[in-house]
Image (cartoon, rainbow, N blue to C red; front, side, top):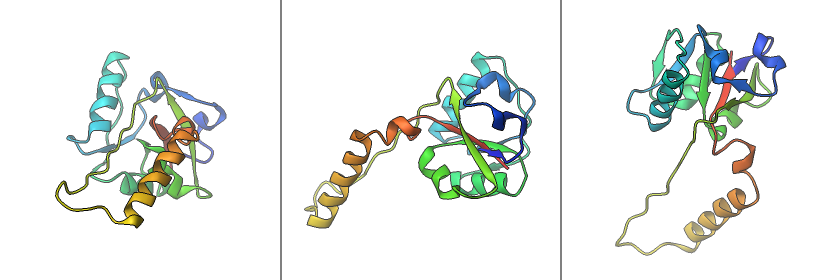
Length: 141
């Protein structure tokens, strides 16, 4: 995520090296996406300023909207900020985002739950993942 008007907004995609010296709002140290991002930054010899850390992607997006920096989050979280003061650009190389549905093993699934699972699968099969859900999205302010 980037703030509207940020220099990187002109790019169709942000290269990881473009993050050099940027203020990056980080997810918690045990967050799998953060760990993948840290590895990608280290591999590219990129260092960022880290003004704030938060456990939640939504909070990171809110902080970007408030002008505290930029963040790398999944597209599902970023989509909550459409039509706001932020813009989204894919980050290259992509930082993979994964999610799982955790269900109780010894309880039957309701019809509504099975339908929900089917809808989520259909979204991914239809290309929702290709629009950024599977890849980290860079956004700011």
